[in-house]
Image (cartoon, rainbow, N blue to C red; front, side, top):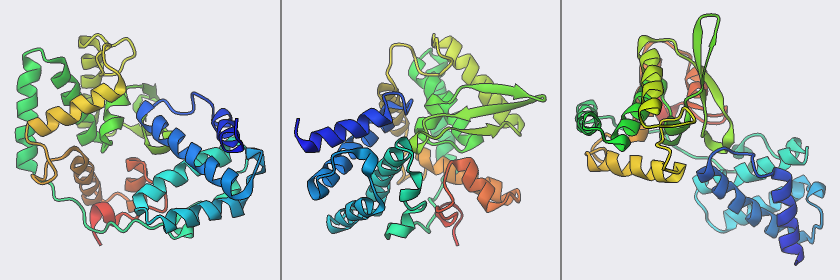
Length: 282
């Protein structure tokens, strides 16, 4: 085994096989982990991943800039670097925010949301669900979570664990970027109903995990099926009715309720370096 592959193998071993429950996220981060380790081995001849230093990381960041990668792509790759640093117990060798490396995603225009078109998309999917279509049942339940909690498309498929504490329900959000789960309280009737729909759908599709994904489908298959059905029913960004736009709608509703912008971003699963302007405008 060459030194490049040896360092990559060490990094992967330190991360472990079960660091993320999402196969979609896992494959991307594992690929970026290999790329990072190979760069360090090639540039510095580093033989042990435990000896990683800030200078190694800056060198990798410089290479990303030199390749002309988009800020979002570089941000994905830096997630892998942080996972590695955490795995070897050296979180502090990586800047906390990507802006410290000159990686800044400038998103100041919230997506336009066409609520009438969204209603049409939901009605089309509901009609299929009423005919016993399991995929439509899954997508309808996932949509309920996105609307009520502002979840990402993948999170809405994976999140089903509910804990009751002091008479209140809390949903654990799984499938987040970087594999970091978060917990949201069901504050409204709509949120409680969304959780009920998830439990009913999981039972009706025969899920043994509590999730709304049919047992004969992988997460990737479910993710692709959800995207395809949503588009087929007219849910596109051009029409102002894509799934991610629902997060923007949720953020604006919370803003109108008077919620702190920092609280809104936390509920959406974003870190402190992400500007609320992406969802709420200037």
